[in-house]
Length: 254
Ligand code: 13P
Image (cartoon, rainbow, N blue to C red; front, side, top):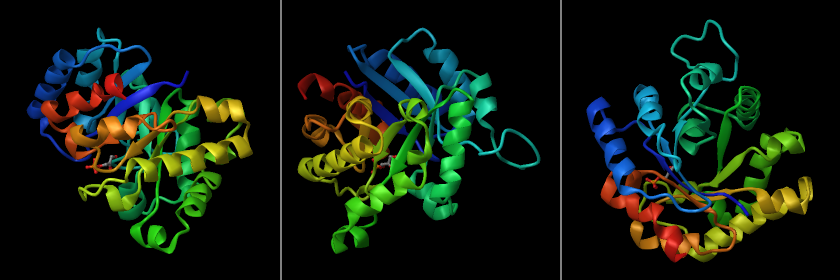
């Protein structure tokens, strides 16, 4: 049985106090469900408090939004995987399209970051997804498969099994345009088939694949009902308890 996940990616939003308030509200407003995890990808300034605040809540975990590929050293402004691990972080979002676009993170660099995260005991939530141009030209499946081949498909089977994948079509991120449940299902199945081809069917069947891109309370149930959609990575709607809590509950109706 695959783990199902409702993950929030706060990106560069929330000052310290409003972030802490949101964590409190989510702690009170979300409930434990069998086989379901809630993950909060907070800014770095909240991480340590977020871990402490949710230590007694089994169904909530905290994720960082990035880590550096090197173990340590003279990299001003960066945060290492082992620093994150040392404050109790167990998940890290890697490969988000905003990191790829604004910080020029390549598939190869992301492969190194994933390797470092895994070696340090962090679970990567690895993002992939195509632009609108690529979707319109019709080679989105090939593009995403290539992203995976040049980064996480380099991993051994044992390591790959620890990775969570998030399919996030760039045209659906922050635009209000959501992939239809059918479009999401089609790509999730493509990704799962690519995993089966590279590793084997049982690895593919066990891999959690999240959908990201304008997930809202109004569409979460339909998306999460798709057989190969195991949850969501949520941006805007994760910034308010009243929109994120219903998304965490969408599995009950899916
Ligand atoms: P939105 O939910 O705001 O579209 O963002 C999705 C995303 O980028 C999550 O990582």
